Amino acid sequence: MNDASGDEIDRLVSGSAQRDDPSLGAAPDNASRNGSRKIEHILRIPIVMQVVVGSATMPVSNLLKLGRGAVVPLDHRIGEPVDVVVNGRIIARGEVVVVEDDNTRFGVSLTEIIEPGIGGRLD
Image (tube, rainbow, N blue to C red; front, side, top):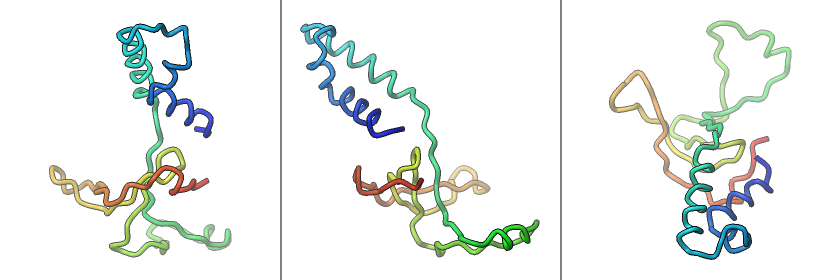
């Protein structure tokens, strides 16, 4: 998502679109209904969420040598926080945990929420 559409979403959620758009009507009830519909649309937008456990840099020749059972050392160590990324932007950091109901699965417990504009993009 580009920054222009992010600004538009911020504008819609904050309600400034209602103040700026005369077609939305002046009645507070009408404005709140329109705002609710816009938020409902925004809440249905699909996102791509990733948890980055680590990364590795290697020459293509080493990549071609990888096979089943190969171990690729990552730049993160056990116990270091992992990055939670949404649509290419770091939004939080956390630690890997085992899911309580199913110990064959793992998840991420968030330990830090990154302020908007601080996290940067992973592109």
